[in-house]
Image 1 (cartoon, rainbow, N blue to C red):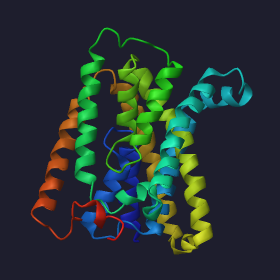
Image 2 (cartoon, rainbow, N blue to C red; image 1 turned 90 degrees about the vertical axis):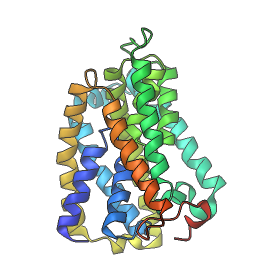
Image 3 (cartoon, rainbow, N blue to C red; image 1 turned 180 degrees about the horizontal axis):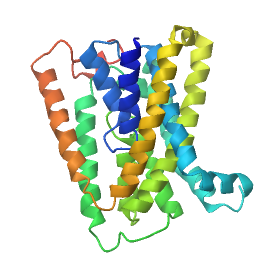
Image 4 (cartoon, one colour; image 1 turned 180 degrees about the vertical axis):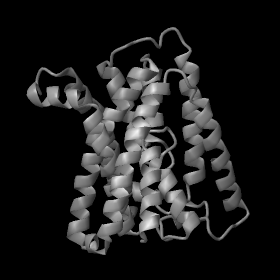
Length: 283
């Protein structure tokens, strides 16, 4: 992988991780358009490392919250809420591995056959978020355990490339009655245990199976740095505009690229994978 490609992918990851448009979906789309193999283990590990780049701004921006968790892990309510939110995500991940062992769980989506539909699903989630946010009941300024659990369930759905993790979790929070600003902050904080968990599990596979040796470290480190810098901007931007800007703006964008993607599949463009479940693990 060239350094310009790493910079481009890092920029996509950093911006799209916190904008509700799916970073994993855009990374996958970029590879398809650039003609890069989409489902190799080494590239999957690259995705995890780029996600680690976006973990850094989450830690820095919300440092007072993390510091209080470290000092008072038992008394800190946010720590307990993050545990509650992480449990359903972990259950979904394990269930996918158990139910689809031959394709590695969510790896069945790695070649992009479902990407167009995923973008459209995210668009629907964002429209629902806007509709629910207008309800008088969506005024809570705190996260309840039920809200955390529901957001964790949505985060599990967000493991499918093209379904935005931030978009789906914010939607889950708003559907539970929380205002968008509070849901957005908790959604961003939820990304930390999710990224760490993915890094540990995928990193273990990378070491055991040896494909970590296929990673080109200089371009990768540059990509991680770019993802980190872009992530700072994206978090600050979203926290500033989340209560003012309708999610339908992002929904329209995702609807357009989702429909165009499905159109390319329908006309048989060779650059795009066939929409067929059976082809996904073989491509």
